[in-house]
Image 1 (cartoon, rainbow, N blue to C red):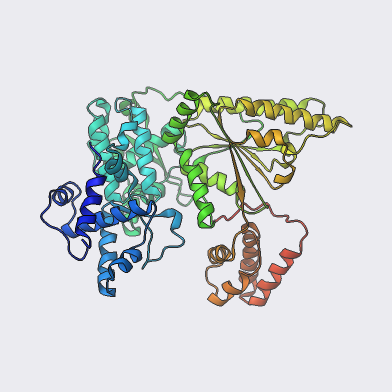
Image 2 (tube, rainbow, N blue to C red):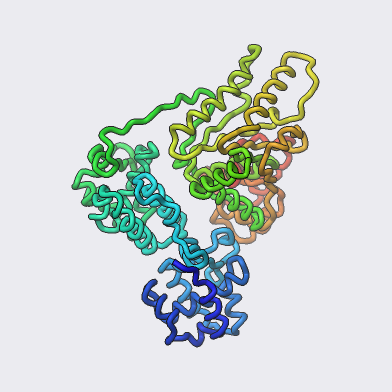
Length: 545
């Protein structure tokens, strides 16, 4: 496949306003109409947006197109309608990084990533998939399904990409016939179940999970959900998938791959798994982590950039390049900033988005009163991490949460506690020197960090206190039904996301008990929170429960 972005840009520049005056008779237009099932107007509009996005090297808004060509309001509404059609057909997507700034009348638009790779680099994302390896195919399918789950693909585009994958891979893997025999919805449901089976997460997968992942809107989700719980799917009738229902617990219809499914599709007679005994670190599955964070645009871009690096395919490529250029194969980062600004929550969000489990370490819990025991426990944590890498599907994140004491400047030894602290720091430095994996530490006190640690962190990311604009968004999420004026008034207080969450919960409980929404009560709660000398909450950043 050859890159054709130059032809598209040349076409759009030559014909200028191709939304108002779409070109019909042209080889490139005919190619897109046929290949991507577009109308002539949709094709020309796509070319126009493609050119502008490439020139801007970022997302653009339809409003900028309107201003450039002086469209009337009626023309602008037609433009938005055409953009919406292109989004439904998987050609354009909303820019998630700018989603808080965009509106219905002025959204921020990007080219679909899979399509972008195809048009600009002349390659398909399938190039990174081993089509003769069933596990590689399932992992690639999972990445495509994640894009749909994150609203980066429409359901229709999801079907297209999955069918393309299965068609190409079936030339090498006979077992895929057991997936291809079903309709689009059941194919993808079966792929989700297989992926969770391979991740060891069968017990967390429900009918609600599957229906919301696949379908675009609530009515379609409910329809498919009903078919699952009524066992009205062929994949269930054929014995590849089973449902374990608990009538005493709501939404407990756990969807599992059966032994028959594992045997037929994965060629497994019996699933063999190793078990790790996590004694010193808390093991957190990525599927249990989900939060909504609010940051300013520039900082959000930093988080997204870090998240992109840790995406499975990209991270594998990075490790190869690091090794090729004689760098250690470790990704070591430090998140720092005031308490409650979203450090730990951001680690969780990255873990969820990249499907990486977390091994979380609480430094205080590994300190021991007996000489030498704390040092042994710290060394054991890194051994646990090495074992976890062997067993888990993806390299997990080792999170040292609130690591202020361990990362502080080393001091002279005057007692056994000082000796223990220095010994623990030396052990941590040794392990980070040749660390292979993903290590993230969080701290509130960057000023006290030892220079030896500072040199070992590849990324050092400072988490700022939210601006007034961001505080308004957080307040609206936590207390969504207040008058607009109240949000404006309370946003003037310089609170962190964690503080806002605590106050919002207090106010909610007070309102529930007394049936009041008195603004003065809310102001008093805020002033009380600000009067504390030390923030005592352990709430995680800007979580949206």
